[in-house]
Amino acid sequence: MKIYDYKGRKNICGDRVREARQKNRFTQEALAAKLQIEGVTMERDSLSRIEIGTRFVTDYELKVIAKVLGVSHLWLIDDENE
Image (cartoon, rainbow, N blue to C red; front, side, top):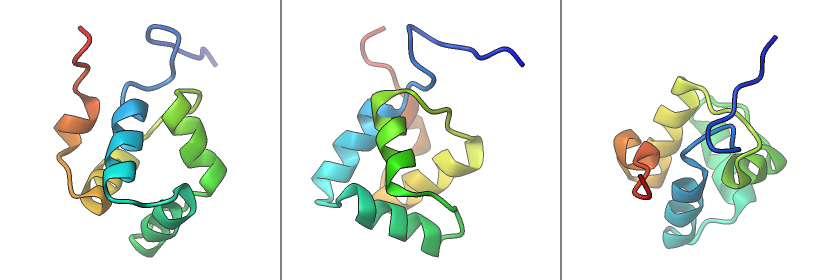
């Protein structure tokens, strides 16, 4: 299986996930718990890896992350550095 990177990262939403999480004053553990309540099994270390760009994010995870953080999924994937 080929592992794909984009500019050395496995996702483009990690920085925005961290930004929105911090604005909501959620710890990584708290966000992981809220995602689990919404049906997405995710541990704190998985969120850490998303935020630093070393873990892929599935479309359904992105949708639920956006919902829990109160942001648009499009905002999460907007790469303003382009």
